[in-house]
Image 1: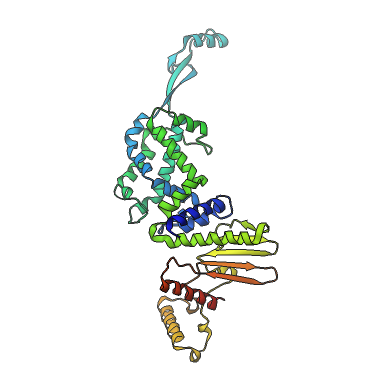
Image 2 (image 1 turned 120 degrees about the vertical axis):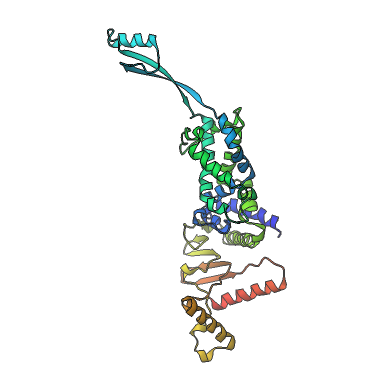
Length: 386
């Protein structure tokens, strides 16, 4: 399968399993996030936000902000206040006479005054503030990465780092932005979005379009998932991960088909080494990806460290000596020096303490040498499984 075919199938798998609660969103995010990001981007929403701020139309929107913010909409409010002994605003004489008459006709110190105030809390501005908040918080989280030579950072951000400073300064200090209230958790509502979409000002129409794109990504719509996989997370140089995820979801689909409706796919809790678990009665099928399944007591270590030195072959002796020297140099335990692990592990655990294993090594190549290497590695895993 070529890259496009893999992306098409993986998009459908994400929609089928991840977005319907059968596969952890956070697990998917940790699998496909760009290399070099810290644990703040291990959850799906953070990864979506990162992808969102890398969009060219978002960068264009930020570039135009300093000029366009001057056209933000305000509304005028009239407030009425009753005061005694001082005049606070324009006196409403008819209201003042009625108020004095109802309280004390002889009280000449009582006045009803009107004041006009300018409010930034329009529906359109709440929409704008929500979009700016998403961009601002993400840029703050990513600021250190924009200054490094990461391939997944677009050239426009890297070559225009002052734009990040411009955005943060606008959000924190610009009077037109700071006077807009922070949206409530449920805002902006659809009514607010519609009003902004019908505004005469381009800044609001563009804000609605970008915010709806962001929400579509969070909701896992097909086009957004495809864009996430294709443009940001998995690069052309990392198609091995793409193929591994494809194979992983194929295992899940095949097991479902073989086991039938009686098996239920469970979402794995955050922090678990498992990526998927299917259960039926006293039998469970557990899948691991790029993990040695140590929480199940598995390890892949050669048995030769337990042999007497006189019983070792020359090849085994060389390996032991190399590990002992490395352990002495780095201060690590000799028995723990074993780093390789299968790409996918499938465990079928039955109630009578019987466990069956399926060990898979994935190679993205048609070269004979690479395939032979994969076969040898798989046989090593089976031989060293403990």
